[in-house]
Length: 522
Image (cartoon, rainbow, N blue to C red; front, side, top):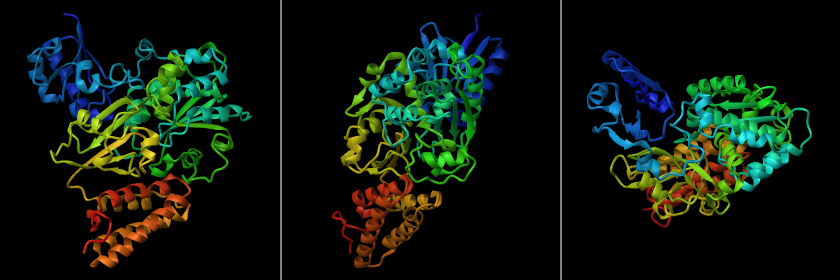
């Protein structure tokens, strides 16, 4: 009997749910039965409610089983899992699962399909095609391709990627850097982690293209300390890419050089802000820098530096491989391409969904997420991390678009979506936003450092106020405080903290003891 190939994810979310035990039990049980088996530890498909998702390679394609636990394997093998047979845990062909079939996977096209550390797998699935195309172009031509694609930063600020690159290209310096901000600290986000653990060569390729476009010769991936698996995988992938000639002194025999290192962060949320991250990389405490100068002109060690997040760099290889027009044809308005959206919180089917801009929250929450896990109505949806606005049902039909969200005081951010049912206390969540800011602030500017501390106190006074007049006074004070933080903070840490506070206050006044018009209830 020929060997059967079975895929068991090595993604840290899958491992947390028992994937390592499943892989070991599968190996042991097949050895006991004398069955020849080839176990591939792939990346996750992002269907987290089905993890660990085990896939069996059959002549008709991969067949999915999940969620599988070690104790399920004897029964699954008895039922004919290795032949793709039916079972209560069988979902049929993996690529026909509705959750996956309805997506538009560009960045995540390889995710869950390949062995993350196999160069052969990566190359067989369009890997390095973008880099090879870039090596045939002049730096300015690479930048122009990225500009024409409409790619904007996927880290939250949505700044046009090519403008950063062009600035670094046109700034004269003997040394330039490329830095990937992989300090993915937003609540409910994991697309950066999944990329580094499940398709690390894509990130390496994107950063190398950025280096070719700007004249940089050294790069760093700044990985948050809570991601040990991502760090280990990136370091292995960098070594493999160097040995194969895709990094180092002579990239693909071109005579061009680019050296890449992975560096571990120190657990500070504010280091997700690009200048605080640079301080951390330089060995200092992460404190936000005043701008100007811009990092593209004076960044790491005072040199011109390209800074983008993981998904921004990961989008670049496909743009170079297939052309700017291919990528630009996805999306709407000024929001071009796709965005890996991360569904989390109180949902039946949490997971990663990659779609073109323009999808609505309602589609994501119900067509993909399946509604709440608790079975209760959805009350609020926070989009864009812990400092993103809470979206009420009246806004769930807005197209997911940077400008459409900005028009209602919301942000798309890094694409994190966290769902709360009708048992959520919105005043408590607003208080948490202020408390979070107070804890994580770098302390450099007064509106953030002091404003967040006062914000916690004011919200406490609102919720404990004994009479309507006192509550009304404190609500006015809270709004004034938010205005000061919004317009006076040095960076988005303090500047965005008012988003969840004001959205909770505006859309859920009853949780603050206010009537529908925002006046204090008697």
